[in-house]
Length: 363
Image (cartoon, rainbow, N blue to C red; front, side):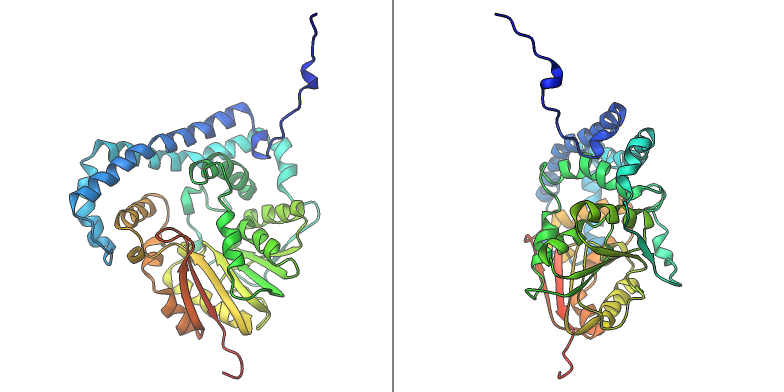
């Protein structure tokens, strides 16, 4: 007996927002990912060559000297030349490809990118600092280079590249959840998330502290717009505010936790110091600062420190080196914090946490 079955009876797979781009967009972004993953084996060869050369120090205390010794050896390798060219190429094409894919399906995607009712607060009289005008991570035009850059990066770049390249198809934001739970106190009532972007860490904070009032601060309107939409989709109540992390305009002593995840390496040292000072101002006595950022070079395996620095130089990360060599314990103490601790979520890898307390009035 022969039976027929209509294809409409088959279950339709649930697509993410990013998978609603056209076939060309999916193909282009998947090709970029393939180039990135295919070159990983070549980078492993470069690592073996460098570690066998004997030029890498046991502890990287001078990254410039490490680069001067290791770069010529790497550059002599065909594996290095191909893999480094591939990395540079992918960074030049990723945002333009993703943005073009969005534009071709704008009528479908834009309603999924903007909040239905939530809004972004503009801090009065706050201007973007000079360092903000930069194409971080090779983001063409910067974080506000496209009006829906938050959606473009979260749903296209993250979905097609980062989660596949770095997350093993898993949740690359799981570290954010772990770091949120690692804050010193069991509960918080008022939390400020600095440099919140599209709310990846902000929503993990909302999950970890469901009773807290949370404010996400960022300079990018495009990122904040999509953060507000994501909060709506998650059913989380978060205030999003456009302001510099070092000058939020929020009231004195209005928070008991000021935190960030992977913000400080996007700022020059004077701005990092200003962020710690701002956190101190925002905290009530006894409140905590809880920052996660890139690992210090002197705590990274030598090859990883070399690779981080090379990647920063060629990947639009102007302040990575200064961040990876800045003593954040000293910065925190100079800002007035006590009980300063540093720890690694995964030894030898990113990120490194810096946690401290604002002294109580009695101290």
